[in-house]
Image (cartoon, rainbow, N blue to C red; front, side, top):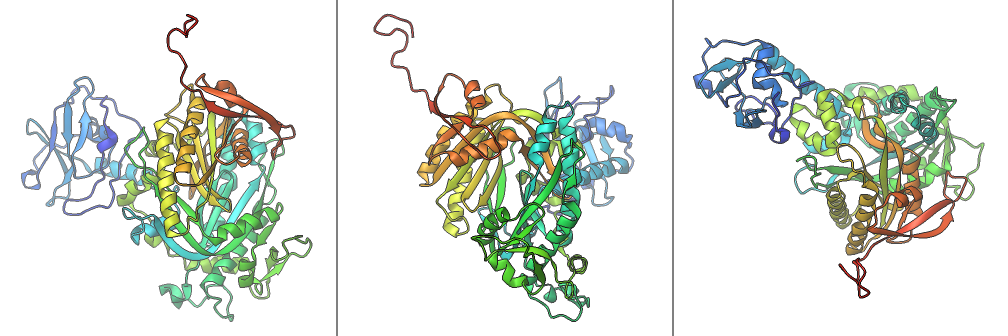
Length: 614
């Protein structure tokens, strides 16, 4: 078969037009070479050279002749390919013929062949499937920002606005992961549980005009932007934005908080005590709601070692993040807690749960239900859906290469091949949680610091062939999640690589005058997609991942703590110092912890003064 260097693959667009991105098309599998095919160089036919008398080969033979083997969409640009066995460079270019609207190929002998409608249709179908799978990895606000110029080169702040922010945390996933970690089909079962739970959850969020910005393990950060629906073109519809006839418009911000509150009420009604079907494990949600000004950043841009596509992360910051960091822990399972700022907008629209007092936080309020004499969650949801215009700024095939910036390359390859479920697995990984503080990322100068810090962390991580899985903002500052041991970059010394990376990253935090704390653990975890077909992310879940976050929280400034498993797997270039065991959340017994140190250079090389070999 022919191997194709996908590095130079580009997307298709008719001659005379210009595409924003460069979509790629991947067949489900590489077709076998036909015995009669030629591996001679092929060049593009000029429209003026096209003849309608050329033989049109069958779709299968056309694919075998080089088109299907390229794993790329039509582009109108040259694509490098290499014929296996002969190792000769082949230039393949596909261009549309202006007169007939067909695509032509010509080899070095001058033989011209036209691609049949079946092949063209197959390529477009493959590209459409790739686009559909990729769209689930980017939020709506990112797509909107792209068309507004927010993702242009050099821009860090891609969106500034206001609205409601919801943080929804699920309890029970750690127990579920531990139960399934030892099963041979544990990854498959856990993936099914995740999909069954998150599909109705994300459908409800979308219906209320919510936008899932980030997955933090099993938790979601959701943005309900304040949109002036009364000024929208569809305002001719008689139903007001809040869904109740005869009541005045509440305004954009109040409507956003109202939608967020109604969404939370329906989420609890549908998903509280969700039965996973695994050993009696049930999932519950506790939710915090805040509101205010929101800033969304695009940071990073370093290129991972296994691809040529730069990787970016988007993060949300602003006062609502501080509010939900207080509100969410105040809520118990099945409850929603509103910040004082959010409560002011909806206090006349909802009924407070007075069954429990929030001692020490009386300004926060528990949400019981809607004031159904004025508003109901079905009518609020219907009005939100009626005015939802987000599909107008949805990415098309021409933006496929933009989406690739935000998807791990290994995951994108599986999307192209139609085998996304293959990424779900239980595997041993080394995890680093990094906590950074000392900068306000919502300010312009702070955003630049966050971008430079992210870029430096990426470069160190990629130099040791790890993966930067998450970058989020909370009330304590910045949080990074780095993973070593994910395909295709798997090594026997991943624990050592993780610790060595921490040594270098400590210097980076000191360089930017920031405080960094590091926790490193090694263990078996679920590595795969989390979410639904409409919105998902690639993540890692498990007890070892949670423990690294606990160690990070317990570490001193610029300190590194590792667990016993990591200590036992580190190579001789790292020496460890044992500390007294500590108690951490989620563990009944004290956990042994260790501080790693880089082993210094030897005092002697070869023979020491006593004549012994060193």
